Each structure stands twice: as structure tokens, then as C-alpha cells.
Image 1: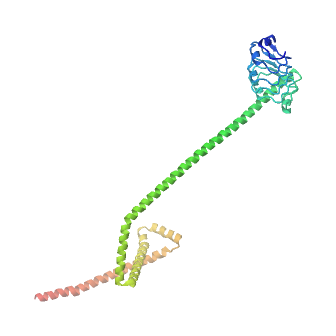
Image 2 (image 1 turned 60 degrees about the vertical axis):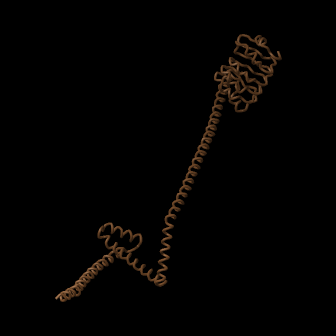
Image 3 (image 1 turned 90 degrees about the vertical axis):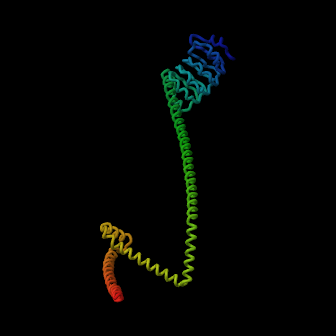
Length: 336
């Protein structure tokens, strides 16, 4: 029988629980009409001219045994795994070169025949010869297990790639956030720097405003003093006064340094010893020698001071006796 089949035609082909549509010259499967027949579990579509199965074929979920042998099928639909109750599948003598991974979902498949199909050598070796019931049962187990493992491996790789993409996106987002954060920090620092610069300029301006009158006053006084010095003695007088000041200050600081070196150990000998030692190590200056010389100088200075003090007192006493007492005696004589 060729042409489009009706529901009545298919019901006529129903015997027990099997719909036999073999040798009907079918070019496509009448899925809608077959689905209208409720009570069947075996479907025989062998010896037809089927090139492909429609996607809707997977809606015939009640099929337990399916015979598609001796057709011209080139592939199996990717949703074929929805036939969860399928236990027997005959694909003998077709033109199938690849098997969809969904066949790995057929957990109840117990019999499979793939002979006389242009399968790849790897799949053909896994399927085996299928020359008897035992080999066809082994073919079903091996193919379902193989396709299940392949699908799991592919899913793992997809998940790994997805995780890598998500991680890369996450890193890109984090890097973008970090760059944005660094940019904000840099802008904040630049703003603070500009603000600090403005504050320094304001402070500098305030200092100039305060010091400018004082500076002007000092310059005027200095100019006036220089004019006075020029009037008094000219450049020679200025030079002499400058040298005199330099000598006096040098003598003062020398005396102050000697006094410090000599007097400091008298108050805290331990710290003084440590201080002198560190200075000698760092600067190479023999402070101990200067210390002893300073002490000797101070002792000599004190001794000389005492002598000059005694001499001055004696001189004052002598002057008092000579001038004051003489004046008193002259005054007494005038009164008499």
C-alpha cells in the first residue's frame, strides 16, 4: 500500500499489540495517524523507503519494540531518547553513519541490530557483529554505555568551558572594578594634591602678607644703618665692624663649646662618656682630648678669674682708702 495512510488503514494493520506497516512503500511515517491508535506497543516499519524520521516520532512513547530495518534512513532524530520504554530496536540495513547521543538515554534498551550500516570503525567495533540474540543484546548494552559516556564527557567539557568563560567574565568584571577603584583613588589623590597645593599657596600668600611689611621695615632699617655707617667711616669701617663681630661670635661659640665639653661630664659622666665615644666614632674627632684640654682651660680660667677678682678687690680697697678716706679727712679739716 502506498500513499498517505488513514487512521482506519492503520487500525486495519493492528493485530494484538503490533502495528505492521512493513512493505507499504512509506516515504514518511504517519505519526499523527499512528498516535490515534492507542493500544499498541510494537511497531513494524521495515522494508519501506523511509529516508528520515520526523521529530514528532518521539511522541510515540508507548513503543516497546521498533523495527526500522531495510529502509534508507541516514540518521536518527536527536530526541529519539524520549522513547524511554523502548527495549528492542532493529536498524538493520540502512544508511546510518552516526548515532545520536540521545540513544545513551535508552536505559531499557535490551536488543539492538546495527548491521549493514556505514558506521564509523570505532562505533562498528563497539556494536559488534549482532549475528544472534546474545550479540544483539551485547550491542544494545555497549552502544548505550558508550554513548552515555561520550555524552557525559561532552557535558563535562561544556561545563568546564562554561566555568572557564564565567571565570574569565568574573575576572574581567573584577579587573574592571579594580581598575575603576584605582582610578577613583588616583583621582582622589590628585584632588587632595591639588587641594594641598592650593592650601600651601594660600599659606604662602598669608606669610608673604605678614612678612612683607616686616621685610620692608628691616630693609629700610638696614639701608639707613648702612647709610649711617657710610657716613661714619665708609667701607673700611663696615669691614672692621664685621670682622670684629665675627671674631667675637667665634670666640663666644668656642668658649661655649669648651664649656659644654668640660661641664657636661660633671653632671652626667655616663651619658657624657657615651656621647663623646659616639661622636669620636662617627666624626673621627678626638673629643676626649678636647675634653681634658677644656677641663684644664676651665680650671685655668677659674684660677685666673679668682686672681683677677682678688686683684680687682684689692685695687678697689686701695682706691677707696686713697681717695674716699682722703676726701673725708679734707672735709673734716674744712669744718675745723
